[in-house]
Length: 454
Image (tube, rainbow, N blue to C red):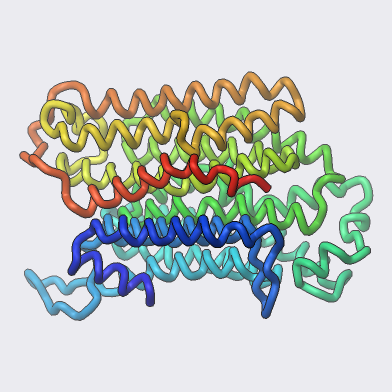
């Protein structure tokens, strides 16, 4: 309900109120983070530094998505217009994604963790099917559900298997117990771990399992794309870190080396795909896959500094990618198309927005001293400590990430404007508020970079 009142406040009081509320959240984050040196466990709640940062990111992205999509918020019945009834429930779907994700970050039971990990897909599917623009949204929604749900079934089976060994589903009980459920698999322990991680790899997603994500982004409404990139992709990063800590993945060196190589070269290939895209939202989606590959490299390296880099990059990407999607929504309002061929000439026709488009691309490329830069350096360095052969793909990912952002900026800002473009002199307040809110915290996050050290 808090999100509903926040959204109504944006409509009545102006979108810039999100910046004031964001400052309050940021100050609370600074003051409270000093008490997170140890985990807080009570009444089914397990909150540590990782979960607290993820919940904060979820609240910030949800607020930004409500601001950017405030024209779709119908907090009361408005009757009919032009013979077509308004659809209610948009804010309910956004709040549903935020609440289910936050609960997943905070629960101490592995089965509740799995339930909310999958339940967060339902409000997202509702957003795609109800507020998507194209007829292909049904195909995109079905592909998203089939990919993610089917890949998570082996994890549920293994969690049930471990429950029969330990007779408990609590994180700390499993972590500090003397049982070793993976020993039952003998020399094939790494296969069991791969099945355990398959659901996270698909929802992350990594290369070979990524085809559902660009489709979902292209067909989703603006808030759906912002939540999908800013929150739902981070569920997998959090899940891999939490279960790796509980079940001690350090004994499975074969799997970690395989995932390191897989994530590194998969990130290189998806970054190359970005340079071949003509749809703006698809390009941003492929860029997200590349950044998540860098996060995966930091997680599976199993170094504390790599986990810190993955957490930092996940938080930064959770703010930066919704910022790009918000700017893409403003661009769609200007030219009524997601195609780069029809979105040219931004610098001459719409210079005030070209500045924010440039800032969004610069942040996404990992310009220092942003949080993206810190996270990429720590994650790639931890992978390089594992194997020097990962220096080449890690460097290529950083280079191609900057090349993709340069391509995105040049393709949109330069050239002659299309005849489909509308005459707009100023940005809409909701997009401007979102841009200020997310970009300031992405840049200012460097002041609190020590909060991400684990």
